[in-house]
Image (cartoon, rainbow, N blue to C red; front, side, top):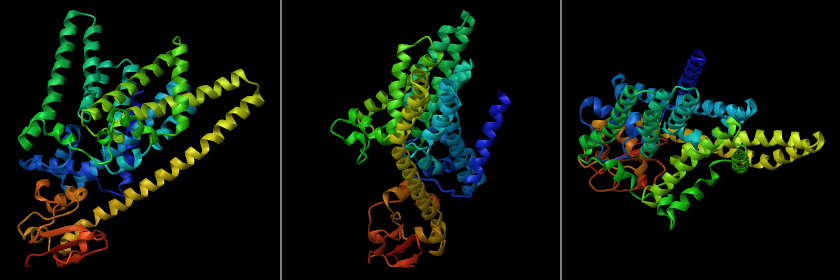
Length: 454
């Protein structure tokens, strides 16, 4: 068994490495993690600007920074993409546990088709890695390797702090079931020490980098237009905002499957299904409650319930097809299954088209980001771009990539145009045509312009 898991993990890493031939650029949050990793190595961490701090990615990007900027970016992308592939495989594995190999294939495919899951994780977001860690913890628990499972749950809290609810509960349960008083004390020490380490990883770097222990929380409370937190009823909006994430037939099959599981608790599969449903529901309620308190509640924070729902929905499809065969004549069962497939086909086609469109958009943005170093080089290099004095200006969501290309802190790149000053902006933006900034260089994707004398 161990060798099979090792082979599967190696395959994920190899495929992730090969994917760098398609594109090798990170998006907004991951680029900040690359910057912070580099800053930690150089001893000048600054987290006053950018997204919320996340400890787990920095555990990769900091040591990888020793290899240089390009290699650091490649290492993180391989880790993130391998995590995505592992998440898909583990989703299939759990669906297989529930209802067999067909359910396994459907579970992995359904997660792949989830809104933005593949396209965002391909650009280096951590949701694929998060799902892999959580599903891996479930798999380890089911295999009886409980302490390793706790380790993975604790690792998940380094990506999503609300998961400390599960880490605490699971850790206390491990203490409770320890067979002797000596072992209970040992497990309690492990759980307590792990909790202290997790808290330290969230707070101490922020204190060093920004002077504010809870900067990550305050940053996450900043309003984001269109997020559930800005809705009239954020708690409910978190649920409605998530409805496009999966195919509607998957939701229907998953709900029906959970109802069937409640009615037959004798089956181990039923108890597992209910446990997965309980985890999904708890995370949904946690994220929705946080949205009500002012956190964004965006769909990417719901990666875990989305993945678990994909698993339950895939298992439900196979379960109800099996029920139809058992209770109906072969002809009627065939008609019922064919009708269900016909109803589902448009939803599947729409999801495939959406995935292709999102992937193309991600590749286009990767091409834009990849072209930035050349544009800066044509403008005379980072020193020439920074010579004007005031922070260079760019668009809000390009701050990280510009800061990294210029090798400055994120707070040293602004978003409010000023004269005199320098702009580093996309060539199709309105400010790229601002007459106050004579052009230094213009490429297909970027404009570097400055009102300062050369």
